[in-house]
Length: 118
Figure 1 (cartoon, rainbow, N blue to C red):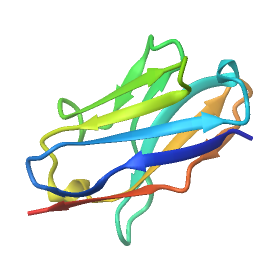
Figure 2 (figure 1 turned 45 degrees about the vertical axis):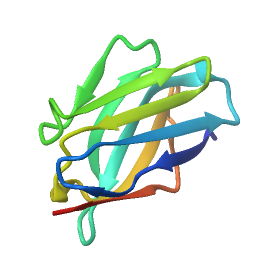
Figure 3 (figure 1 turned 135 degrees about the horizontal axis):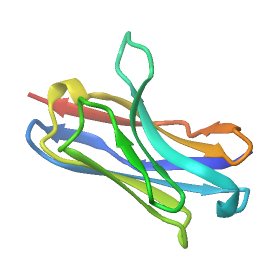
């Protein structure tokens, strides 16, 4: 299974920016089909934020983050990033990195906390 490790996040003021990074290993980058980010607010279910295909051809975003967040990947470094701008208090939550393999296997990181203060 792919091993994922998130970094970044922390406490940010509303209107500010933050950048998350996820490094994956344990398997070849070429085994990955899609890489992305999900988040979970306190008391809520985990929700989709954004994803991108390994070749970068397709990127998708949740409506709530369109125009504010940007996902990118660096296959050479086996990383996927999430640039978050114009942050809102409702963006607060634990952000999880996810990969989907070419065989449909899903892997998750342990998550990183993002707290947006008003």
